[in-house]
Image 1: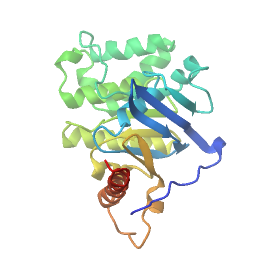
Image 2 (image 1 turned 60 degrees about the vertical axis):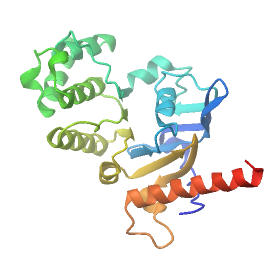
Image 3 (image 1 turned 180 degrees about the vertical axis):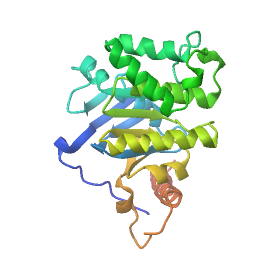
Amino acid sequence: MHGTPLSTHPPPETLALSTHGLRRTFGDFVAVEGIDLAVPQGSFYGFLGPNGAGKSTTIKCLTGLLRPSAGTMRILGRDPERDAVEVKRRVGVVPEDLALFDRLTGAENLAFVARVHGLERQTFEARARELLELLELDGAASVLAADYSHGMRKKLSLAMALLPSPRLLFLDEPFEGIDAVSSRQVKQFLHEFTTRGGTVFLTSHVLEIVERLADHVGIIDHGRLVAQGPIASLRADGRESASLEDLFLGIVGASANRGERALEWLGA
């Protein structure tokens, strides 16, 4: 997979999310180096990379938790810095740390989200009931979030993100540490979300799950986007049957080899 090219960008009007030259530094350390993301509307986009590659920094920039050092972003056709409130109304986020209110019940966590988004009571109650039933949390709606299992906490965070009916969903390691039953429920729910036209932007270390769910991927390594596009388009050079893990290791390995050769050439 040496020299895997980045795909050309689809037309801007077909993108749920795009960045141009997105960069984030921390002092002299460059965490994200000028990446150009292109996430089509209605896609399930897997954002992959080794530990420390810049995945979490990127998703924090996209969701407003960090301000980019340089570059531009477009989310659902809007500038997230200029139209922050409108973008946040149309976006759902499940962060890696889940950001639950432990001293509130499951139902109260959802009620808080509804109040923040200004949902009408009737709309909120119907939507909350539907989500709790679909994610099999209806029997624990009156239980404190602090007493939820890890899998239940993941599902509650997903329900909170989906409550305002977002068009774009950011998921940071949603399958890490949850049991097979919870994982299957979440996967089925996400498949239904994209079937209805929603877009999912997912980071995960579990490549087997990403391969079953995602139709597009982006691979970041040392802060640089080294591959992007439909999974099928990355299966080049006679590797149509290659697994996503094989593709990932081939691309990241090629990127690492190029870096090593550059250091040798520089005499490092």
